[in-house]
Structure formats: structure tokens, C-alpha cells
Amino acid sequence: MPGAALLLFCALAILLLPWLGETLFNSKGEPREAIVAVSILESGNWILPTNYGGDIPFKPPFLAWLMSIFAIIFNGGIVSEYISRLPSAVALMAMVMGGYSWARRERGTRFALIFALVTATSVEVFRAGIACRLDMVLTACMVGGLYVLYSLRRPDCRFRALRWLAAWVLFSCAALTKGPVGSMLPCFAMGIYALLRHDRFFPTLAKMLGLALAALLPLAWWFYAAAQQGGDHFVDLMMEENIGRLMGTMSYDSHVQPIYYNFLTILAGMLPWTLGVLMAAFSWRRWHRTPLSPAGLFSLVVAVTVIVFYCIPESKRSVYLLPAYPFMAYAVASIFYSGMAARPVRVFTWFMAILAIAAPLAVIAMQIWPLPKLTIAPLKWWNYIILALPMAAGIAWIANRHSAVGHLLAIVWAMLVCYGAAVGPAVLNPRSDHKVLDRLTADPDAQVLSLEYFYNHRLFTLNYYLDDKIRTVPSIEAAAEYPAGTLLLVSERADTTGLWPNFRYEPLLQRSCDHREPVGLAIRIDNNHNP
Image 1 (spheres, one colour):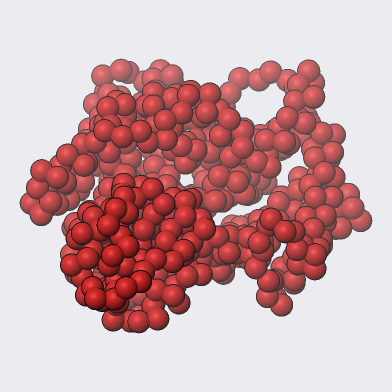
Image 2 (cartoon, rainbow, N blue to C red; image 1 turned 180 degrees about the horizontal axis):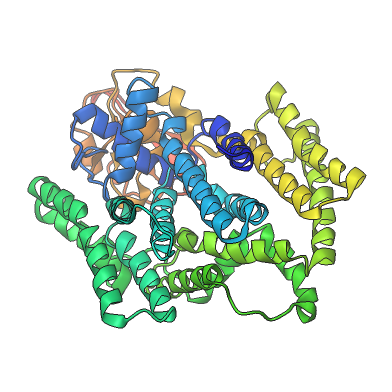
């Protein structure tokens, strides 16, 4: 591996891998994905496992398969927080290294390093790379497949059949992660680019549509096998999640947002580089207008196609736009690389250097003088060493002031390492429902129930930490059929009619990290007992 590529790989490994297990699950999304892998390993059902007493997964199983395989290889078959986030981290590293290879061939090593590090350190990309969610695996497969298709257009391209096979595998994995969009959207974007490069319409349509449909074959095989187990309920769920979400015909509202929401999330998701671009805009008049290179046109087409496509459905989330981020990072890297905005970039580097020094000092101050409304866990001794990294990077710029872009990349990288290793766990761990686990496991033989209210009020975090022990009941009367000592988790808005004769109630969580409402604990007592 060449020196620059090795340096990039080490920077990505340090940024992501050591800290994946430091943060407890603190929202419903991560444990909801992780519990699918837990149920696969417990039941041996790799097609359609159930959890929470009968729930089936909302998405195809590729992410759960990866978690299960990593758990078997690295952790004795146990799906820990680290193992559950490892597929996302590996996917991010692979996508960035693939992007580096693509950009190096197009514009040289220095540009490729800037491009790769801007991609990895954009807030939305970094956040997805350290989370147990399917979005980064989906994005890496889609973007990787696009890089492969782009390479097929080079006159000196070798091993064309293998590259077509690689694109098919990547798009198949994307479809197995989140459905048909995983192959259809990137092939659609590549088709638009090919037409803009004056390729003939019908051959382009045949190649891109053929590849997209061929990549759906593994998904179709899984769908058929899963339908044999799940029946109409599974088919209806998959249709709603894939077709209904796109067409706005879902039976419930899911992340309904106006169109401008996508553009606001892009501005936030590209931080801190959004600030640098805004500062560079002051040099706009001095920029020379030059035709887009093929790589520049390719990046523009993919980014615009992804953003416009996700403006169509009513359901909008920032993570849906992740496949556009590497191609927006290409534009950011072009600004920094060109030298046309040297003065604004230096100003931005000064800003980030001061922030890199001040932010860790603020974290240390809050350890000494805690804020009354902000709970922060105590830092470990080695966290203070990590806090020194961004401070050292900021001081290095102040002392040196050469190569603003290089110092800027080092500062942002160090700040994100600091977040993943120290600040994130300290802030997020107190929000996790893990803190009440001892209360629920005091009697290891007690059955734990959850009073049914609404699917989005499921207690996914507690269910994960209780090893998928929670079972739902439709009413208090159904819970009363269980023996004394049974634990019943009750969300604030659930119907508690008939609770008192058979249960003793106590508050458990002031704010569940899953649905952000209070949760109480009702303990089944003997029928002859007067509470």
C-alpha cells in the first residue's frame, strides 16, 4: 500500500475503530437494528427472525447478516455495541478508501487525500459511520458501485467483466440492505451521466436497467423465502416500507417534512465544511470559470440526482441523502485544492484552531463545575489524553501557520476523534435506558412485559439489554394472567385501566431514550395482597 494510502487508512482506523463500543445505545434506532442480529444468532433463522415476541424486521437483512457474522468471528456470537456498529465503520472506511483511489487517478494524490478526509469528517457521514444503522452500509455499496461504473468508461480499463461483476455485487448488497432503491437510484444517476457524455440512449438504458434489475435478484430470492415464513403480513409490510414510503401512501406518518428540509440537513450535515465553503464564497469573483471535468460532472450529476429523488417522497430524513455526500465533498475539496480561496481558508483554519482549543477546555470545565441541567458522565483518565489531541492540533497551526488545508484537516480529524472517544460517551451515556437495567434484572427469573400502546413506543433499548426478553401484552387484564413478580413496563400514554388491583406501580424512567416519554414499572402482586 503506498504511503499516502497507508496514512489515510491509519487515520480512518484511529478515527473510527477504537471507540465504537464506548457509547451505550441511547436511541431506538440502534438497538432496533442490533436486536435483529441477536434474534438471528439465538434462533438460527437467517431469513426472517422475530424479536420482541413476534416483530419481524422492517428492512432486508444484509446489515443483520454482517453483524451476526462479525459477532461469530470476533466476539463469540455476542452482538455487543461494538460489534453492531462495526459494519458501518468498515463500510465507511471502504467507501473513503475507494473514493481516494478514484480521485487519485482523476486529480492526483494531494487532491485525493483532501477529498477522502473531507468525506469522512463531514458530520453526517461520520455520524452514520459510528452508528448501528443500515444507512452507511447502503451508502458505501451504492457509492462504491458508482465508482466501479465510472472506471468502466476509461479507455484503458482492464478486467471489464470483473468490474461489471463487482458493480452487480455492490448494488445487490445495497438492495439487500434497503430494498430496490439500492440498485435503481445509482443506475439511474449513472445513466443520466452517460447521456450527458453523449452516449446513445437505448444502449445506455439497456445496460443500466439490466444491471439494476439483475442486482434485485438476490433481494427477490430473500423476499420469496421470507414470504414463505411471514405470509401476507410480511408482504404488506415490505410493500408499505418500499412503495408506500416513496408514494406517500403509508398507513402512518413517518418523518414527513417539507422539501426545504433536505437542503437544511445538507447544510448541517456537511459541517464543519459548510462554514469553510461559505467563507470561500467571498472569493467568488476571483474564481475562473472552467468547464467541468468528467469527474466533476459525474459528481454533480450524482449529487443532484440523489437530492432531487429524495425530494419526491413525503418521508424525509437527513440519512437518506448520504449517497450524495461524497460527491458534494468533491466540490469542497476542489475549492480547498484550487488555492483560489486561500485567504478565506486560512481564516477558517484560525476559527477551527481556536475552537479546537476552547471546546476541550469547556468539557474539562464542565467536569469540574457541572451544569445543573446537563448530565455528563465522569471522564476516564485516558479521555483527558484524547482531549489534548485537538488542542495540540490547534496550537500546531497557531505556531506554524503553513499549509492551512493540511492543518485544517488535522484539526477536524482530531476533534472528531475527541468526540467519538470522550465527549460523545460522556454526554450520551447518561441518556441511555441502560441505567435502570439493574432494577429489571434483580430477579433473573421474572418475566418482563411491555404494555402495548403503539409500535413507535416499543422499548428497543431495554429489550436489547435484556437479551430480547420483553414481550408485549395488549392490556392490563392480559398482564394480570402472569404470576406474581412479573414486571410490566408502562409508557405514559398507555391505557392503565385496571392496573391497581393486581400491580404495584413505581416510576422507572423520567424520559425513555426510545420515545422520550416517562416509563413506569408495574410489579405483579399476589391477588390477595392489598397494595
